[in-house]
Length: 527
Image 1: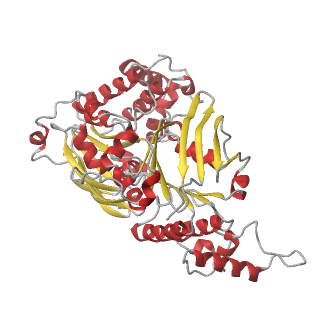
Image 2: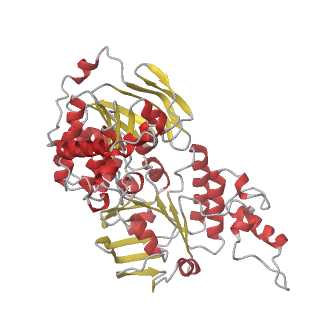
Image 3: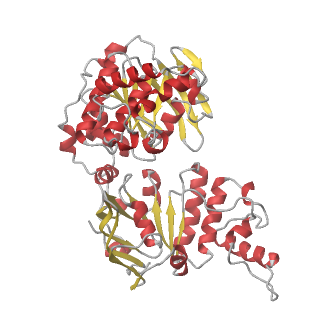
């Protein structure tokens, strides 16, 4: 039985950055020998909490207690010296060094005369590998091993400093099922050694399989602490998203979908993905998009939404399956090939993959069209002005000045400019990944109306959004993703958010939660 005393406690922790309160009075308890999952959507504060715990960020208020004593870490090294280590999603190791060198980098055993002892380093690495049951040659180069083994080596490196608390940030994002099983085996060993493990993942199946306790954050605030067997998955989704079912169910949809199924009978889809998949990104998926149809993609972060968008638009190459465009098999090996089929992609990362802040509004609108024509066929300035002015007027872009710099526009207006850029190519399929994220409600409504008007004029749209009411409001049909797989394809006729959330979480047939009866749970959840 584990001790009922928390190994680590965060009490009333707040962290602010210029213009943003990232954490607001957050509590967290980590017990020895437990896996504690930290849950929340993008922007919930998970990363800030991890960095506050591990010495990256200083907290503005509140306290951190380690084994009952208040601590303050000045750096990551300071946190590690106190027994708190982190393994991030992207393995932070050196592939050109050996396994032993990576495990003991900076802590190499030395000869009496000061040189590094290769023999003793390999022996020590072999001992540490044995702790987690990993049988690999310490002298082998790290790059010779698959990502799963590299992830385990990173964990071995972390526990080499007598770790009391191990933070695993999205450790399974690039692992297949067998590799996840191996990782969970190692986690079980560490639990038995009394290590407190903070586990961050967007895969609900994995969270419920491995977790002893859950904490949910939303918009930088604590929602609550829960025991997994006392919290249905659908309820967990509600707490992460922060909406009540009644609020969703009363939303009026922007499209009449009552006869959509009949209208498409006998038609051929404009785009059909058949068994389309990419190892480590998304399982093989079938998806059809008809002319003038808006297909919504619903699912939690990490469900494969963006991965699907990138495969449909040639940004990433598929390992399996095929794509048919207008009934013909087509290779979408690059965004340029997708553009030739008039398939365009508006990324969710508009700041890094969309806008060019130091160029004008006019230049940003003309950019894709110029690239499509080729840089030796320059679009005349007069034509660029006509293009910019027509979209400024049609989409209500403000300021209505083609010479305004993109970085000076609001988020909503930047998003409108990006849509104008792709519409200038006269696309037939528009894939929108979180097109309304981070913009005000008025701009959201304008973009949603624009998308529905485009569909009415025959444009096919794939619409991805974490906001379920938005997906329901404008989609004819909704494909539901969970843990990188498509689990449902639902016509948006009499579809409620309760049904959609049930599909996202795991279906409506879950058994009701049972009260806790184990001695370990006497310390209880909080919420």
